[in-house]
Amino acid sequence: MKLTLLKLDTKLFGFKVAKILSPKLSQKKLQLILDKLKKQNVRLVYWPSASTDKISQKAATKLKGFLSSEQITYLIDLKKITPPSDFISEVKIYQAKTPNTELKQLAIQAGTYSRFHTDPKLPKKLFHKLYNTWIKNSVNGSVATRVIVIPHKNKIIAMATLGTKNKRGDIGLLAVNKNFRGKKLGTKLIYAAQKYFIEEGYSKAQVVTQKANTAACHLYEKCGFHQEKIENFYHFWL
Image (cartoon, rainbow, N blue to C red; front, side, top):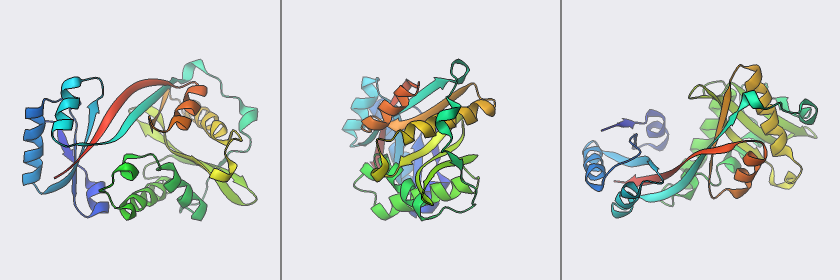
């Protein structure tokens, strides 16, 4: 049985959190895993399941898993693109080692469609705590290699965190201030991210978003990304 206890989530939430790593499971096997974790006093279990596997989906439903997110991984072949440099002159590197107020607010905004926000059993204060930690660890270099921003009148109005995952360039958080949407700021951030990943020697880049976030899906597809996979992310409260 492939599963792992999540140290960071456990520390942040104040109760044990685990993740099932097998994307396909029968109801019987899933039940065995959940029973085992319950005996270990695990309270919350994540399961990114194969969305096309009917047996797994039926198992999750029968065992009262909460479908917290239909999570799409988008992929792009960086060898086939040339991001327009003149289009991204507004994008700057965030230099400070701690996030300012605007960056924290944008990080929370980036999580609006996330499974941590959609799950009604997860207190909103824990959602805020998680995303505050995420942006803090991004700017200090723990989970990101660069944070890029678009400033306007000494205020940050858009940002993205960039890092690496699965030997690919990875866009973590991305958000645009709601008062400045429709101005192609998201597009500028993505092109700047692509340029950075190419400069760093990556051949591929990825970004994960939620199917419900149609605006983000459209944005990534417009910028050359294509769907690699869709996972149905279930939460089990034990």
